[in-house]
Length: 385
Image (cartoon, rainbow, N blue to C red; front, side, top):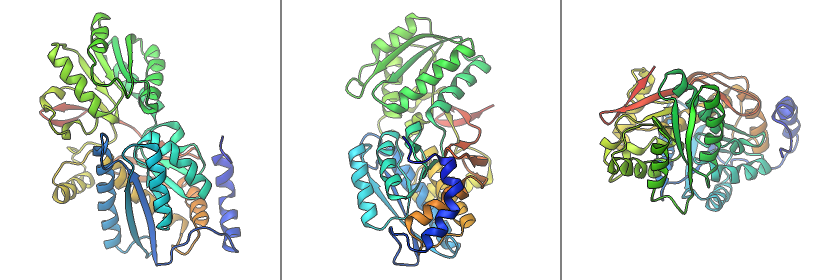
């Protein structure tokens, strides 16, 4: 249950900020810099995501500081590892608050984000998650996101498959122990019915049973699936693709943003991902000048091609900058003052970056932007129309 609705909070934001100037408590920066924290997995099974977010945000911070900062104030940026674990994410948040964090760019994955958003709400800290897709990840008034939500991804995937005639019969493999995967699956099924798509199998696995997908694959084949939908993360997807090749299963595979990172997975044969399609807001092969500049900087600094998580984080920092300049905040303000001001500003800005054009936000914290679909061709993303 939210303490206030976003609509109510934003209407009151300006008045609250003025009132707080007369004597609100909360963290303030002792230096002339904004302290922006980040949280995500930089070790463990989801490390590809967290490392990408940490690195993408760092490039944006460096660019902004080199150009004079936010409202003339530089950014201090600190990223904490949570190993894709909710309890460790809360510990990381507490560490950042000891550091006097004023704004949180995070967390990276949905489960930890759900845990941390209760903390940021209680502490009046503005939170912008680059990639936490679960609806509950922005359950409170202080939280917004850059990426698509789980429901949007599930609906958009089914629409794309149906409208482009990719398949009439679809099998689904999903992680019932993960809110990201379950949320996408539920909405995919709802939209599949509208698209005339028959879901011939819907096979679940859990965090404890994610090594053998032979029965999941066979159920799809036995049902006559022309396409298998994979709404989960790249590490498990690599096993599915490997086992499908071993069983000589020849169907299309379609996933969401969780599959982004599979081409960078150590030990995975990239040829097994040939033809895989996924929903994403970003492609490193785009001809867009801003995207090309970011990709070049990322490759030069980190010696790898950035994925959408890096791009989401890069845009997240610039979105914070745009909202901060709209609200005219300063580091001397309390966290509550900064939070209220940014909440109000977020619903009145339009941002164009490397993950979308003319992105706007509603009072519910959700972004309004169009997805793109890519296909893996010769080990690279190719944008589909």
